[in-house]
Structures are given as structure tokens and as C-alpha cells.
Image 1 (tube, rainbow, N blue to C red):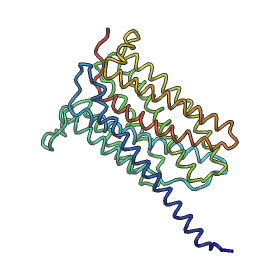
Image 2 (tube, one colour):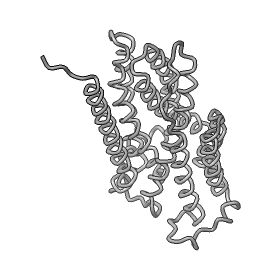
Image 3 (tube, rainbow, N blue to C red):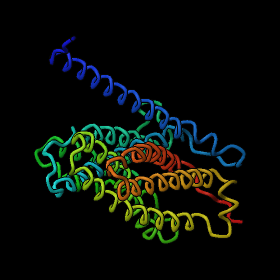
Length: 336
């Protein structure tokens, strides 16, 4: 009889764990790379045959917006789920490694890039001499861009501090700035549009970022009984967030495209095409969420809901990328 030494078993387990971690890292890098292709190459596909002209560097702007939105999602999700897990009875005191500092740094760089575009009159700068930093203080868009840069810098400092819960304040500033930026004072009822965007972005960040950090926490807890309670708590929040996203998304779309023109503009304008792609992806995410909820409530092992949840968070990454693209495309101007 051949005896297997405990040290050999431990070594095999360690190698298996390292291979699994490497596989997850590779899969994450591939997903990020594929997601980045959406804002980079999406503008050309959306604008093809519409007769519309996009601003210079629209692909880069869309990518920066997608990175900014992703950073907000990670930060909001981590903040929410950490608070949620503190209320779960019997939860292990072993949270996953925080990504808040990395997310804040990525958001800071994206906001800085977007501010440089605003400082050159919404053109892509080709050198530092073209960037009018002082001019940012004299315009509404410039002030909002600077607010986002400062807010992400404060978020990074909060992530380094002993009170990461203070992240809520700079995150709120970023979301408010984005809501105001998306609706200039020249449009009809800009305050209504800003409120809709505020709720839409906040709910989206809770849904996408909350699911990501929930899955990371469940993997860290290694199947603890408290995992099902955490997943259930997230699912209840996600249902409310989905309702908010749907309601505000429909209202915002109708503000951009009157009801009688929606069928035409969804296929004839770049904005409409991107909006249609986002709606299809959100519908797919909703189906995956329903599958996960069914497993959570009906399956013998509630944690089997992680399988559709992983697919859900991957598709949500695409939704974030398309959202970045949507904000960079020209607004529809054909009303008939």
C-alpha cells in the first residue's frame, strides 16, 4: 500500500489553488480586454450609415467614461456589501482584499483624462501646451470635471485611511457631478434629467458593483452558511435597483427621443443603436438574475446561485462599457 504524505497533499492543494487563481486572473484580463473593445470600436459601428458626425477622439472619450463608471461601481459595491456583510449573523470576519484604492486610482486617471479633453474645448489634446487648466474654472463643464478629479483623489485617501466608510461622500460627489454634466442648462428641464441620471447611475453602481463584491466575498468565505444570507440580502437590493434602472432609463430615453420617433431612432441614429444594445444586454442580465434568484430560493444548495451570478456580472461589465459609449455619442437630432 502506498501512503501519501500530508506534505504531498498540501503541496498538491497549493498547486491546485494557484492554478485556479491564475485561471481566474487570466479570465478577468480577457474579460476586461473584450469589454474595452466596446468603447474603442463601438462608435464606428454605431455611426455607420447614420450620417451623423462624432466629436474627435470619441473612442477614447467613451473608454475613459467606461473606466470612470466601472470605478464608481467597484467603490459603491464594495462599500455597500461590506456594510451588508456586517449585518449577516455568523459572518466570518474575513473580508476579501479591498479593491477600493485601485478603483479610485483608475477613476482619478480617467477623470483627469476627461478633464484634459474639456480643457482643450472638447478636443483631444496633443500636448500639454494645448491644455488650458485655468479655463476649467471658468466653465460649468470644467468645474464639474475638476470636481470629479478631486472626488476620486479624496476617495483614494479615504481608501488608505482607517475609515473607508468615508468613501460615501466623494462617491456621492462623483455621481452628482456626472448627473449634472449629462444635462447642461441649455436643455429642457435639466434638473429633471439630472435627477433621473442620478438615480440611474446610483442604482446601476449598486447592482453591478454589489454583485461583483458579493461574489468575491462568497469565494473568500468558502461556502459558509452566512453566504446564502449575504446573497439573499444582495438579491433584495438588486430587485429594487433593477426597478430604479428600468424606470429612469425609460424616462430618460423618452426625454431624448419622443415616443413616436423611438422605433425609427433606435436603428437610424448612433445614440439609438447604442441604447438598443444596452437594453438587450440589460434584458439578458435580468434573465440571469431571475435564474440566480430561482436557485437561491429553490435549489438544495442556495450558493449554486453563484453560477448564473458570475455570468450576470460579466454581462454587467458589457453594460458599463456600452454606457460609456452612450455618453460619448452625439444626441439624436432627428425628431420625425
